[in-house]
Length: 119
Image 1 (cartoon, one colour):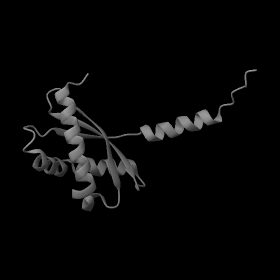
Image 2 (tube, one colour; image 1 turned 45 degrees about the horizontal axis):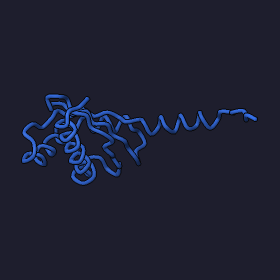
Image 3 (cartoon, helix red, strand yellow; image 1 turned 180 degrees about the horizontal axis):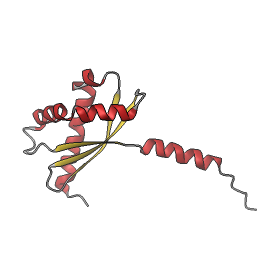
Image 4 (cartoon, helix red, strand yellow; image 1 turned 90 degrees about the vertical axis):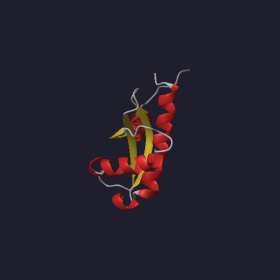
């Protein structure tokens, strides 16, 4: 269970990372539409796990690798944005959020089921 402080900090990091991906780093990632799905913060606020979703991207794994390569620049930009609101700029860990693909897969499986009618 995350504390109230962790939840507030996660919300701040998620909002600012969304702004960075949508506005500040467009030149780094081209036409890719990157969405920050959720952010989880460690209890000491030093590590932020961020789950991303991509649209308009052919190879999602390659895009995730590119983001991981640019983590230092993203963290610097984040630090300049939150320097008045937070003392610690967390280490950023990026992961691919595959919940949308999983939901589509489960929907396809469920739609193929034949359920007998009960009289």
